[in-house]
Image (cartoon, one colour):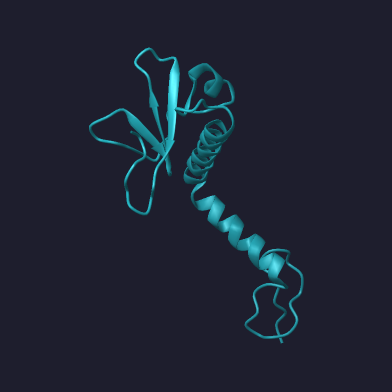
Amino acid sequence: MEKKYCLECEEILRGRTDKKFCGDSCRSAFHNRMKNAKNPMMRLIDSRLKKNRQILDYFLNNVADDNGRVSLTAIRRVGFAFDYFTHKEDDSAIYYCYDLGYLIDPEQKIIEIKQTSIDTGVDLFL
């Protein structure tokens, strides 16, 4: 009988004849490695979008005034990347990072952050 080896750690497999991995951890590691190798750029973009959303959420809930406004300099300082957003309203300058939208004032000094309702598609900018 021919010996079979784990596709991840190359240990000898015992048990079923159609087994490919020695355990769940090797199976997960193998598939994660394969997935990450296929789309490194997509992974990088998704990571950047998530970081932007996290920054917007933090500023909206901890720093912003009652109107959701914060200093553009402050949000830049913590690493917000304005080149990354999920979508933009066609007729306005409102950019979105998932469910959080932001609008930069004409003087480029203040950013206004508002949360949108994804279920209805209605934004909460008033």
